[in-house]
Length: 322
Image 1 (tube, helix red, strand yellow):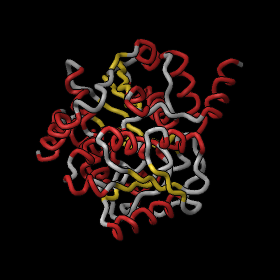
Image 2 (cartoon, rainbow, N blue to C red):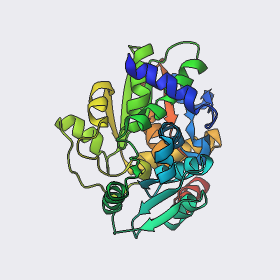
Image 3 (cartoon, rainbow, N blue to C red):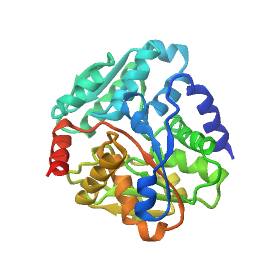
Image 4 (cartoon, rainbow, N blue to C red):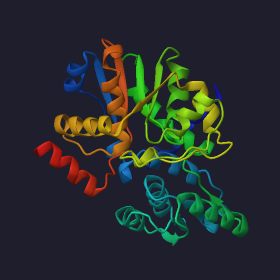
C-alpha cells in the first residue's frame, strides 16, 4: 500500500524534529467505561499540537529553491504555530495570514516562533484566499492545514508510533475531525496494518462540516456555530483530497454537544492531570458517549492538542472548583 510506505518514510524523515509522544494506558478511563483505553498524548507535542508532524514533513520535502523563496500559510491557531515553528527550525522565511478578529493569544503563539504576521479581512477564508493569491503572484509555496498529501502523511506518523507502542491491535480509535488531515493520515496507516480496526470520527455538533459532507456525499458549504473545539471548527475546502479519504476510512461518525465536550475536558484534566484543548475534549466526549458499545474493547484516543484559551480554561476550572 503506497500510503503506508509514504507514511513510514515520513516517520523516518521527521523523527529528529518531533517528539515521540506517549501512548499510555488510562486506568481511570478504562474503569469508567469498562474497557481498555489508551491516550496518544499529542497535547505534549512541540507547539502543543500534532500539527508539527505535517509541517515538518512538508517543509523537509521542499526544494532548496522553494525554501529560499519562503512559504505562506493562513491560520489563527495550531497550523500557523506549527508552520512558524518548523520554518524557524529549518531557517525558512515564513508569513502567516490571519483575519482582523484573530485571538491575540493565538497570534502571540505564532509570533513567538518568529513568523511574519499579515492581517487581512474579517474571516479566515479571506485570509486564506489572500495568502493563496500571493503564493501564485510571488511563486511561493502555500501550505494548507489539511488539503496536502505531505501534510496528511506527516499526521499519519502518529499511527506508526501507536503501532510500535502497543503489543496487540486496537479494536477502535477515536479521532477528532476538522478538515480531515489527521484522521486521513492515521486511519490510512492503521487500516493497512490492522484491517479490522474501527475508525471513529467525531466533531462538535456546532461545526461538523466534514462528517456532514460524508453523509451528504459531497463537500457541503455549511455555517458553523461557535464551539469550544475551535481546532476542528470551520469549513472544508472544495475538492479537498481529505474528503475521499475520510469517506473511505471513517467507519462511524459521532457528534457531541458543547456540554459533552466541556464534561470530557473536565473529567480528563481532573483524572489525568494534563492540559488539553477543546478538540481533544471532543474525542473524550465521543469516548464517553460510546461507552456502552466500547465495553471490553481495546480503544485508542488521540489527544490532538493542548492549546486552550486562558479565558475558556478559567471557566472550566471554575466548574471544577464549584
